[in-house]
Amino acid sequence: MDRVLVTGISGFLGGHVALQLLNSGYFVRGSVRNLSKATKVRDTLARAGSDVSRLEVVELDLLSDAGWDAAMKGVRYLQHTASPFSLETPKDPQDLIRPAVGGTERALNSALAADVERIVLTSSTAAITYGHPQNRRRFSSDDWTQLEGGQVPAYQQSKALAERRAWAIMDAAGRHGDLAVINPSGIFGPLLDEDPGTSAQLVSMLLGGRMPVLPRLGINPIDVRDVAEAHLRAMTASEAGGRRHPMAVNGYYLADAARILRQHYSSRRVPTALIPDWLVRLAAIAVPMMRPIVDELGEAKMVDTSAALSLLNRPFVTADDAILATAESLIANGIV
Image 1 (tube, rainbow, N blue to C red):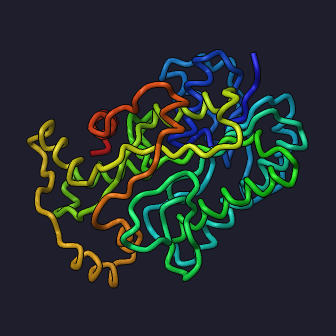
Image 2: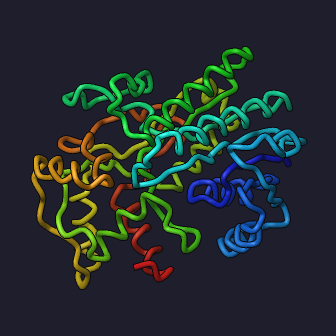
């Protein structure tokens, strides 16, 4: 069976991609930033039911050239899921942009040098829907986040710049059709370990009483199992090459997540009250952590997901089910 390199295997999505690859019979070479994480990665995937005899773990850093060429030896497919993400806005946007863009360059250039057959890149709807006029609410895979004007938050910049760099590298090599990009919105669903990742922190805040009111925020969640499966299918499906695949359950709000959590966890202090948009904007002036959500207030953004649905050949897991799976994992792991 073929060998696949999964960068960022210790991450939420990277772990699920590796899990599905191992369960499909592939040999997996997973990268971590520090080999001290190797035992935990193995234990986590074994606990989830994978045969980890087909798993090896290597050390790669998005900001270092060391090890990339060696990691590509014998690899047929690359799954580049590694990228920094934080709910908080860093003081220096380059803290997110440098590793995102530099890591993409290192991963793709090494893959091309090793003649890897297909590269699947994890991007985001953040590379599509930001920097547009506030009344723009519908988007397709042809749209790109507009970085002019300096109003786009650092994470969204990092995803847009990294994906643009990926396409530029592939085009320069004459291999546009050998790159497939998956563009998920906020990823929710079952955790593989006690690390809640980033999007799951929203559910943790709702369940843990740390969010007393609800901003009118569209989150359009997508289940991690769907995103991982899309990565696997994009690796071998001829029609996936040279395309972007936005993934989101459109029209779903933070208030919808609170609703389903209240129904299933009535003993917890899940908020019910909505806070006006103007008050969130005012608060964001003083609270930097709130600034990235200002652009998301109001009507939920809608993204054309037809390419991903065609790739999966089935509907997405429902947003309610993705949120509940997140909650169940958070509680089972003692996080909330």
